Amino acid sequence: NRDDEEQLVSLVVINALAKVCGVSEMELPLQNEESVIQQNGDVALLDWLGGQSLQYISVDAQGILTAGNFLENVAVFPGSYNPLHDGHRRLADVARQRLGKDVCFEMTLKNADKDQISWAEAKQRADQFRNLGTVLFTQMPLFSQKANIFPNSVFVIGADTVARLIQPRFYDDDPEKMHQSFKKIQQSGCRFLV
Image 1 (cartoon, rainbow, N blue to C red):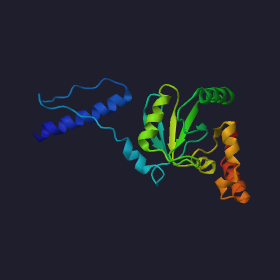
Image 2 (image 1 turned 90 degrees about the vertical axis):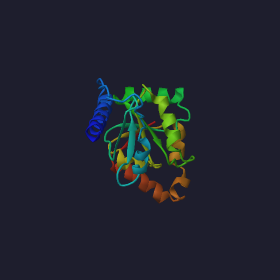
Image 3 (image 1 turned 45 degrees about the vertical axis):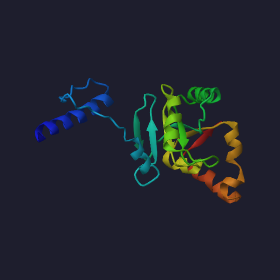
Image 4 (image 1 turned 120 degrees about the vertical axis):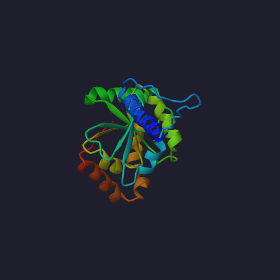
């Protein structure tokens, strides 16, 4: 009956919250032929990413998703991580030691120099960071754009990225656009650790 259905739906919601909080779930009063099918709604977050609603999606080391518009004063290590390798790990370790804070690995779904990454591919790549660190997904290929959503942060980059950072092709071959981009980064209180 309707009352039983409403009680069941309420318990399903409470169990979802309990699961996220890491506490015991309640037993559901299901009939013999009934079962609960769980579907994750991660894909809906992607629709909001880059729109007016969200600027980044975060997946922590335990796989918990959160989202937001600004994340301030963090160490951001952008990359495509296809795959995550020892060089990435070592650079992240050096950044942790130098900065005294955890490093967030950032993957942009719209890379300035590579093919766009699908959400399914991005989630698969994020699995490499299980128990290693937080992954931030954005649609911001340029550092001046990243600086807007990660103000007062440090971008951790390797020498290969530094070489690309000053290539005129990323600024429509206009040196003034390149200088303006660096100025936006500076005005956002951001800096680089190479």
